[in-house]
Amino acid sequence: MADTLTVHRAGLATVQDLGRFGRSRYGLPVNGALDQHSARVANVLCGNDEGAPLIEITALDFSCTPSTDVLMAVTGAPADLTVDGVARPQWEPVSVRSGQTIRITGIRVGIRVYLAVLGSVDAPWLQGSCAPDTILGFGRALRDGDEVGLRTHCPPIDHPHFRIPLFRLHAPVRRFHAAWTIDVTDGPDRTEFGDTAERLFRSPYTVGPQSNHIGLRLRGDVPRRVATGEVLSRGVPVGAVEVPAGDELLILHRGRGVTAGYPVLAVVTATGLSALGQAGPGQAVRFRHRTIAEAVTAYRSQRNAVNALKARVRTAFDALRIPVPSTRNPSPQPVTRPLSP
Image (cartoon, rainbow, N blue to C red):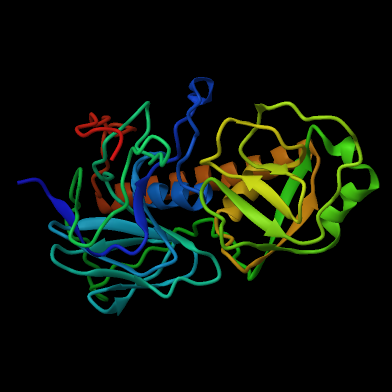
């Protein structure tokens, strides 16, 4: 019988990966984990490929029990992580025995937590990704009682003195704040806003309750377009900061459609986009202008930190003889059900 992770309390949880890259030409959104940095680190801490499927938990409490011994890692927003009632650390590998209950409660400051297990989890794939797509009806939210297939097990790791193994791998932990500072570069339509474009950087904006994986709605001192004429629908990137007529900004996130017709004042950087994935309704967001060179430097720095973590994980796992899956990516599982509900 295949090993599984039995979900007791699902809250708002889905199986995600890093998204459906290269499919925008066919009109498919990229989707995937909204906080890409936290998702990557969770997988790396488990010895997985960065893009392996994992569980994204949004805002609400979550609990599950594995049917076999596993090694897991929980990253993302600060939360209370326990294994059979014993507090365990985030952003480090954690050994869990068969039948023990993992609980993630009290998610705070940010709104998304990521749970990865060594070897990854089973999920149906579509166009190179398991990321849910709400437009196509592909993927599903986890429900209480669901069983998620596990690809491998990890023999229990036992500290000779403390019994509970402790890792100190120094993962690159994101700083979480009640008010987020999001880096942006100039958008293609910045000149159409004249002097009002500077409003974007002067005061905070508040994330609205209708925000989701498709995009965020922000209220505040909205810049005004001074140019006249229509804006034709065209391709827009993930992270586009759009300014429709009204009192809101729209920021397109990973579930965005590939075309839109509002003027694009700015574009959120790759590192800023992961931070934006943690901004919840009612939280304050400030924007900070960055040049393309500065944005690239920040992204490279983040990637270098993840690559350095990979080396530390590899060294620790080799020393402890922790088995790591030989394949870099899990084999795609065929879609076994209709794409629409």
